[in-house]
Structure formats: C-alpha cells, structure tokens
Length: 322
Image (spheres, rainbow, N blue to C red):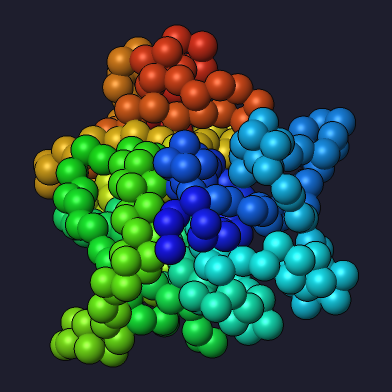
C-alpha cells in the first residue's frame, strides 16, 4: 500500500503533538481526521482556547473531533466513518479498547521516554528531576495497561547538565516527528519487529512519571544541592519549582524559581537560610552547600534575572525560604 492510500487518524493535544502531525501532513500521508481535547476556558475572561493541535488542524482544513467522552456512541460512530487503517496517538489521553482496537493496523503511541522507563503523564520532567543523563522517545502499539504495549522503535538522546525540561521537550518533539513517520513507513512496509517491554526491563529499577501537581513543585531545601538543582531544571520553564519567601515582618510571598547554580561550599547554616548582597546574588543554604538563584518570579510579575529582581525588591540576610 502507498502512503497516500493509508488512512490515518491522528490524536493529540499540546504543542508536542503538533510536530508529528505536521510531518505527516507535509510528508504526503493521508490524515483523514484529527481528534483533540475539547476547548478549555483560559485567561481572565475565561475565553475558550483551542489546543495547539486543533489550531493546526483548522489551518490545514483537517476534519476534527473533540469528544468529551471517548466511549460516547455519537463519537464512536463518527470515528468509524473515517475508516482509519491506522491511528496515531501523541500526548492525548488514555483510550478505551473500543477506540484503539478499531483500525485494522492498530494504534500506536509516541511516548517521551525510553519505555519501559517513565510510564505516565510527565516523563520529560521526571527524567530531568531525577538527574538522568539520557532519555529518548518510543513508539509502541497500544494495549490495555497504559504505556505497556510492545515497543516498535526508540531513539536515545543525552540530557546535558545544563538542560531543563523545556530544552529536552523541544529536542524530543523534533525527533518524535521523525520517528512517527519512520514508524508509519515500517508498518506500511511490513518491517516492524516489536519487542515486549517485559524483555526490555531486565534488572533495572523502573521509575514512574506521574502527573505533576502544584505541591509536587515545592522545593525542599533540606535536600542536597545537586538534587535541588535537578529539581528546579526538571520543572522549568513550566510548571516551575516554587518556595515561600519569609520576610522579616513574618509575611510570606511565593517565589517561582527557574534557574539555579550549584555552589559546593560547606556551611553550618540552617537549610533555607539566605545570603545576599542585595544587588547581584541570592544564595540559599541547602543540606551540603548553597544553591545560587539565577532567575525567578514574584506573583503577578514577569520572570527576571536575580540582579533585576533585587533592584526592585529589597532583600537581605534576614529573609529566608521555607
């Protein structure tokens, strides 16, 4: 079968999923329909906001469905009319069997980790938070348990010590677009040789990648410097690590922290103690050294370099974080 004759249904929502859809469309593959999440209210006016995938689909006149429930019979009937040979899922949601089992060639997913490592909603964040030096992307066929299907292909990339979740996201997004089209070609050519994830796990400890909530992002200053450094970059630029700044008068303000540096100096200060000249640097005591804050944000303000913030927000060693 030629790629123009293969009927593909594509499912995805965020920016990460747009690149793969773009590669398919520009590569001449026959995308017969796109499925994305319903519009969500956003901003002060709670105006409904399109997902990045919906925006792309509208710009390229692709048929679109936005089901509230994936088992809804009206949605299922509309999906059947597209007569997909293959479905592709990138950063969407868990599919019921009635959906993933519909196409004759099955449904495959692009996941932003080296499965079976980091199954779950936030694989990029957790790989960086845990200080990993390597990650990658995986395509695999869907089955009942989430992120457990047989692996089709993988691509590995290094994680630099200077990377954050944002830079790793962008690298994997671009590689993912290429891997999706390569996987489609392998399915078309009948050259796919899948590997069960159980065989790949071996003796390694599997780490999960659960959804990240606000409380997940709070910094624990009693941790070692390296651990805090990785934690901050694993949550940057979004949703961002945060801490409470306690002012001398006892009031507190939330600081989001986006970028830090490791300062390996021993000290006898309580974790959370601040040292600053009030002009150019802001250091926080951790378990085994100091964490230098490089960029941060006050509520309702924009992200600033530390010297920019200190020019407008007076701070001294009587402040502390908690």
